[in-house]
Image (cartoon, rainbow, N blue to C red):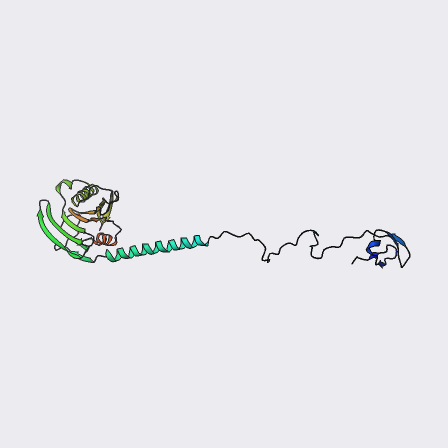
Length: 265
């Protein structure tokens, strides 16, 4: 159906057939003659108004609409999560197993002479002996952690004459190196001057070497109390100072017969 034509003189809407469009016609109302516009092609009802010959655009909610999609990466996150959980479980099992297997009992011990006390790790209570030495009485106590083949020793003896003229820091350092060698240590890897019970002390270890399975490591602390020397020694395979029973052994060591004014009692 064509649109009506408006008469330019009287503004009457006239129904002009399509075959008369583009010609001069007479208005049935005012008898004015005017030229009609040429006929317009009929617009397709299914075509969008902006372009008559273009196909309809797909809607976003249309099933056939090809949306850009992200590449699936959920599997990667699942794999990372599973790996993290497995590693955490392994670490927890190893830690728990280490605590259960290597959880020695601590045996408190005080020397018969009352010179020192300490908590010895091990399944066998420490045994003590005393014998004479040319530089003074030697008092020692040794405990064994049989699960790990570890040895823990505390020795007390008079300061040898060759060290009596040296400054305390220098004397205790040389004494610590001697005790390291005597306990089976091959060479020092760390040496640190410190204090213990208010007396100059020296820590020396030989464990920071190239890794080896069941390597025998030694940790020594020497304390110079007046003219008396205390040597606290831990020796065993892969010995480390952060092991709780090793740390407990060194921390628990106490001088119970402290010299007054730097002199032996």
